[in-house]
Length: 420
Image (cartoon, rainbow, N blue to C red; front, top):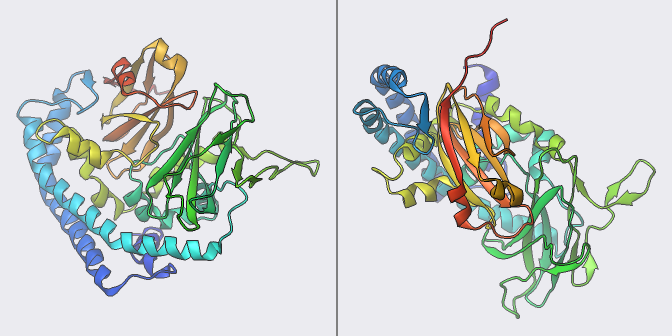
């Protein structure tokens, strides 16, 4: 294994020791358990490959040119036998994933407490695209394992911009009503435990620039405490930039006029989708050896959704802890195929439809997909994995579940690449 892989791989394992809140002795057994389970999954994977590889070749030869995209199509006997062989590997992978989460959760809690103490009762004065900053500072690859454990189905269509504010139960928060057609946006407030305590969205029923109240579910006598505000500015396809809303805390605007211009003046804070999302195309190459066996349980889980695995269980494990205004569709991706979306025109008129395809290691292999036509093919797919479609309303309001009935997805055999 080359040093370029070993170095970040080892760094991911010991990254917690470099954080301000170091792990406690009782947390270390969870890390040991996670590493042993990952090792077990890797060794058994090599052993089972003797049978799984020939079965996969037979299955692929028998698959039709068009497959349903939710479980990826099944070949009688062959696919069932493959799933039975992959099920124990998936269980070991999932247990390793859960063990690592339990190892990191207390440390993340201490990290948040340390961050809150460092704020010193002061609020931030701008939105921060922390994921992009980690990429620019070349720190992203070292934190991938940690990030994937707590945000496994990576959102490649928007970066969450974060603003930390400090307020008590008697404080007031308001968000500027930005009505640009370039994006659908929502601001969600979280307490220090990560619970959602408030949300506000773009409101087309009010004038641009109006102040929208962000009501928090805090007792009126709650003491001052840190609150994380997160804005998700989902861009319309081709939008050069999105204006991020200003935030007013107890009557004082926190982030007005913070973006410098060439002439020395300042203007509203902007977010450029094309520039800030481009790094998603590099993520697949960052997938390391420890990530794949810890995350690939989802392939077998999604293949078995509905039967033999309960749909509710698979959905709970697969879907990210995301925006409460978003609806999701998901399924299996197969190498040599492409995803074909059919979307009712009425849905496209009022919604943005996105899709990301992930490797079996949960890294984006086909990121930033945007469905803008009633029938559109994305792809082709170069490897097996799974996909996730996010559907949000253009006006920022809640996306109703019944919209899912008007979006269908299939896997279609991809046309072979032309050779010159």
